[in-house]
View 1 (cartoon, one colour):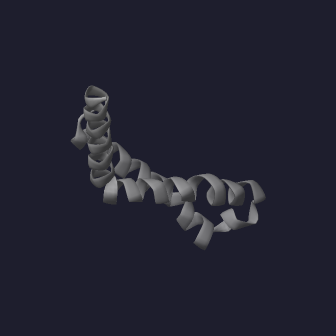
View 2: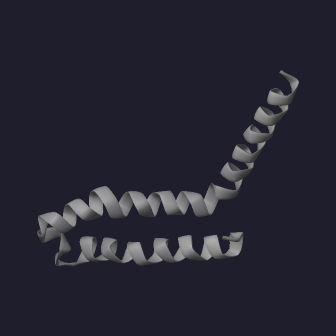
View 3: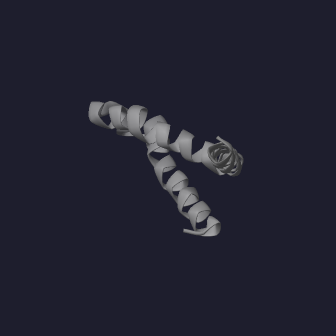
Length: 78
C-alpha cells in the first residue's frame, strides 16, 4: 500500500468512526449501555490512534526504519 492510499484509508476510518461520538454526545446513544461501552473502549481509542498516526505516522516510520538500519549495521559489524 502506498503512502497516499494508506493516508486516505486512515483518514476515512477516522472520519467514519467519529460519527458515533456525535451520537454519543448529542443523541440517544448514551442511553444504551452496549453503545456506551463500544464508544468508550473501541471507537474512541481507534479515533485517537488514527489521529496520532495521521499526525505523527511519518515520524514513527522514520524512527522504525532508522532502528532497523542500526540493527543491520550492528549485525554486520558483530
